[in-house]
Length: 285
Image 1: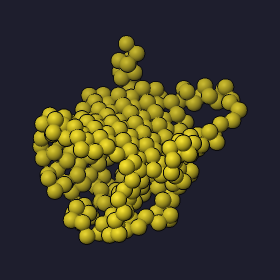
Image 2: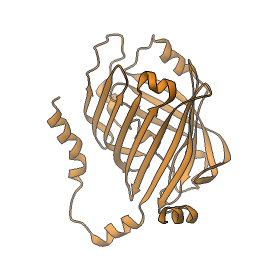
Image 3: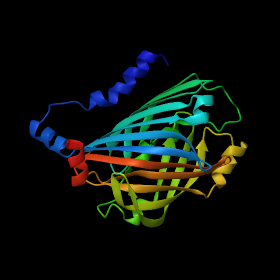
Image 4: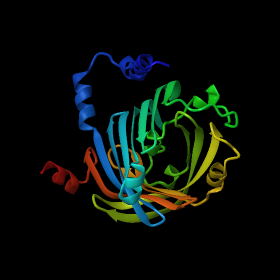
């Protein structure tokens, strides 16, 4: 697919939603808008190796999310690792992305992925440079690209039902992820509820156990795939975003073949609807 048709496809979902604007409705939406920014530290086997940041804006049923990550220290000096991803869509009981793009760079290669989706179904996807044909990969059929979320939207966890944001049921879900090349499920289940204190956030979090289930686009005989499929040492801590009825990761822990990889919040900032008074005041100064 050439770049111009793809860009048109990426923009189309947003353009189709345009229509007459109700000033009163627009004002209510702005009043209800919530913005969250979370800074993370990245550690591997107890050694700091990088930083990341996630920023999200939720306005009514629409959301936009940006994620950046950078390897630092000796690892960063050797690999030059850096990545950035963006997603936008609507919340309808689950994230329903309309567009997704991610770019990753290292000292040896750069990869860009773009996708356009309609009602969570992939209608266009482009990977640059293209993936090499590998007959040992499980084929990604059209059915595997329906009712999916991209890796950035997968971080957004809408509350299930109208119950409390820290209801254990908000852990119990299956997240169908398609990253442009492979399709897999992240299966979450409730572990415990605990209280944490971080700069900008103090309160309860849901600790969800996580499992990985490959669906398509993977090589079943690859040791890394088998390791992750059998991995029971994965978890995510979800913190509530008051005023938006969603939860976001405060901590992600994954055991890898090189040691446990932990991505943990170092600062949480929320503005707009539901923001704690002290935090809103600090931002206003």
